[in-house]
Amino acid sequence: QVQLVESGGGLVQPGGSLRLSCEASGLRFNSYAMSWFRQAQGKERELVATISTGRSTNYADSVKGRFTISRDNAKNTVYLQMNSLKPEDTAVYYCNANRRADNKDYWGQGTQVTVSS
Image (cartoon, rainbow, N blue to C red; front, side, top):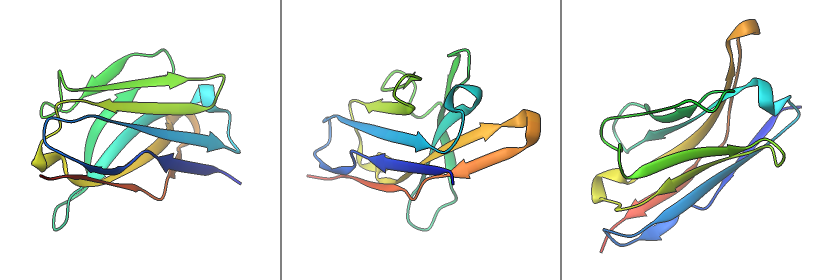
């Protein structure tokens, strides 16, 4: 049974930082591209950042230079370091594991990030 469990969300003031974690189990972690998505209230889910199996990264324009995605294959964990947070970063953040070779795709339950003074 595949599980993706996010943690690290919370309330932070504008300009602050948070680090999200997503621990995966039940899958061969190092064979999956890992991504973070987010969904703000009333909006569609959007891709925030992706890290490939070869550790190539890609970011949404809105977070470039502020967010950093990384992975620790030994811990089956992907991270999202979020700096210089803005109110518009407020959303539920979801972890995603994807393997194109056999069309496997898994989601976590989400963690709330609220940026407010």
